[in-house]
Length: 219
Image (cartoon, rainbow, N blue to C red; front, side, top):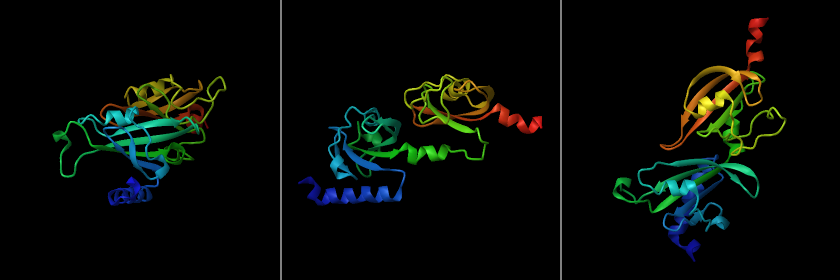
């Protein structure tokens, strides 16, 4: 049986050590590049998971591509998680000498436990302060702080943020802008472009309600 082989045990222990040293990861896999099947996982019951049609896995099979980073939704638990895929080439060889990797390291972590805490503004930019993360198509990647103007809750990976600050950030335009946000509320916003991979980027909006931002001036 594969799990009893020394090579398997060696790789499994290395994955466990990697996970213990990086609390942001919840599950790690080593995936066969030929079949797309996970041969080892830090959760043994998930060995055999099929990644063959996973966009992140497929993208790193191209030797000229770098790591792949995606935010995805677990359809069973309806929770968000991020996934990093890293191609593995034979030791001591450069990827330029191969048409594709022989395996792929996939690392997954829960958004609510890793990325969202980094976006918490607290008292740094005021009570109404918020950090919004979108992809290059202006789709939100994490939960928003407030409901939309019609009172509904926007769903990450589904809702397209059409507010000007978010559109600017998604397009890679960095700067400071005063406009309305996704609620239709006037805000003062800073937009930033975040290159994630050679083919993908995110946009970040750091904003505060204009009323709160200008309150000290009006006093």
